[in-house]
Length: 465
Image (cartoon, rainbow, N blue to C red; front, side, top):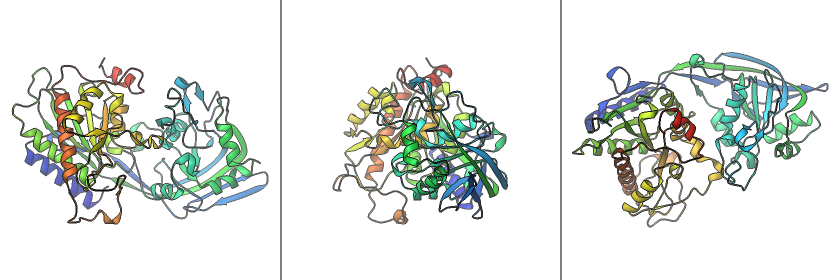
């Protein structure tokens, strides 16, 4: 983001949307919605150490710990008392509160990612990961409570991935909204390797496994470790210019044309290609559907869903007049498929409509086989869902015609174009997205979330009953 290449990409997408006949829907009559961002890059000479009981334990940046300050200052010093906060979750609907009545203001919280293990679908959705289990929630909740910093103890089972994934995410520039945007930031948000975490908690006479076991009790309370954490976090801070791209095709019904169906794509070339084809097809419809269509190319998805988050807080059409967000991520060029993934669609009142549309294009729906990884909370549709908009992503399944099941291809160097690519699967995604979008655009009532869903209160707050 903020590079010459990024600027060229957004302008190319805008130009292509203009060629379809879709009207500009961004700021000041343009195709662009400005997304203000601050880039923060922790520098290699950052230091972190723990002291207590007459001992001091240093940790090495990138080897033992990674992280970033959310204060957007070039030099941050940290000195705080360490509390172990379990999973760092406060979920009254599940009768779970890791904080109890403990004041954590000004403290450094050490905790685990993930959530209490369960096979009960009514308790943290059973084996599926909810947003409470995501590291982003942990930092947000800690910041809301006034904590100074968060250090997540990494283990492969609780994170679901190795520390090299954490290092690749936190070891690069972090894109943040400007500090004046109303979001409270932590002086430091980071991770410790399991080995470094063991050295830390051993200073309090404890072990990582022991603390993880304690975290699984409903009676857990934050544990003072008798340790102080000290850090100096130098950072390169810069202003980043970035844009969402937005275009509109007006609807035909005078009573419904101020309501929209959103088609969105993340900062991914194949997803944006699908978006452009949908805009082309929608613009050529005659007569037009009753509701309008808003085509959004969202920036900075892999930097923390920044483009979709900004849109959700600054919608171009009010959320209470938005019918659905049909989102597209990467669509691999491996040919036709027999199945699709629509994780999250089943949570909405659109589910029967979606199932019918899938049958009409002669596909079948494959359930999410890795619900424990919380994929629903990791793509741009999640920001829309938090704002109450029914939202889900359409993805190709794994039953590819003429190819072994389960083939994966995510962002390696071989992303370079190959003449062996087969775009037939992308065509299937366009056909399905178009059919679902048309059906929603012509419905009499706005859709919502099913009873009891976590996003239903936000939908109702937007005025949709």
